[in-house]
Image 1 (cartoon, helix red, strand yellow):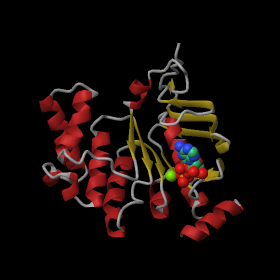
Image 2: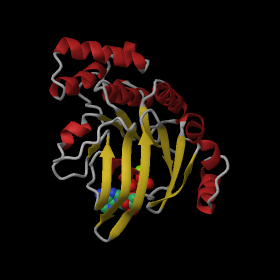
Image 3: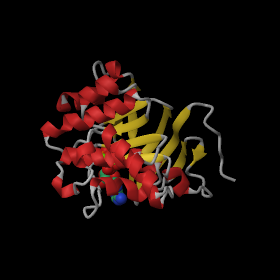
Image 4: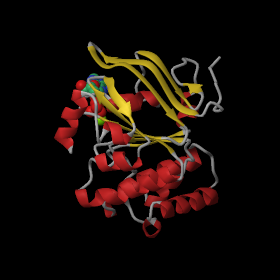
Length: 251
Ligand code: ADP
Ligand code: MG
């Protein structure tokens, strides 16, 4: 029996004692993290510290070595879990946009709605158009990915995730592949989502975004959470020397 705690506790993601190894390499060394519904949590830290692996363990793109992960009341680390059902509730946006190159922006939004959620074509198109409007791309519904800028492609990728009505969104360095002048439009879409109350777990190097939008910032280094707290504390006045050293390098 898969453990369902329900969502009355207001917790969107609960990670407890999470370890992940690849062969002899221990990448996550005991992570405890709680994200409440409606909260925006930014994860910062050096390259190789395990940030992507943590996100990938939340939707079981990686299988944890030990520990538990509970998403929206369902323990995803339970062997009996229907992981497809859980993943349907989680939107994920990666550094690489992963759009289908042979489909238009609108078709990229309708295909999963039709196949996974079994929406009929008219409804998928209606929701797809609504969602493209939310990310400021109403005029691009017929464009193919190659005809869009990187920032526009990433906004289509965000819209695609949103069109599936996710309960929470995971972002893994969504602006890292973009030219600097295109970053702002993507961050603006993410900021609007946060303002609407979306639960978001965001790996980012954008310290101004973390400072202004995050309810909480988590600093990871070498597979552990070194420091966590409000952005004014972790980003602006870090306690731990490793956090300070990292911020000195990126700010
Ligand atoms: P970050 O996102 O913080 O840069 P990652 O979670 O991507 O860090 O990677 C953490 C460590 O795990 C790195 O040393 C990386 O090489 C290693 N790693 C990640 N994925 C795999 C994998 N599938 N197989 C082996 N090693 C991996
Ligand atoms: Mg990464």
